[in-house]
Image (cartoon, rainbow, N blue to C red):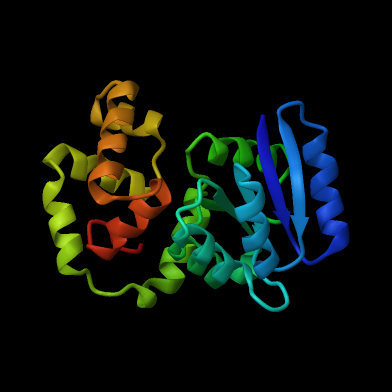
Length: 218
């Protein structure tokens, strides 16, 4: 059973999410928070599998709340909801350690699938929207650090190739087909990459790839 904490300052939005999620046989809503500070407290108390996090809220916003939740080492994973006109906020949330983001106008099935994926340890990241984020906010990317150089040096040539493909937005199946590998081999490479980079998930690996220059904005 996947447990979810809903974080949104709008009551009708929370009600809509709750109705959708409670209609799923494998999802349980364990609580609702109306702002970032409350989300942090409830995450610590309830330890949900997934925190469904809005970005713009009064007081502490979703980006800061995400950063603080991740910094505590919580097992809970954060799935941020955003809109196209809030791309910069989504980028900030990914930087803060979110496991992915979806648009608020995503189809119900997409939202549920995203929650399940994040709960299972995967990340939810739309290649098309990710490219928009990277293109729009490449000026925010800092130069890579000595620590990142050392992390990059740990990767084999094949792992760098797979990381580049991941950052380009390819799925495991696409990487397997284009690099002539078994999909299970690709999954193994991705797992090794995350371990060597100390990355929480694929989203953080993508950010790393852009930071160190393996991939450049289109």
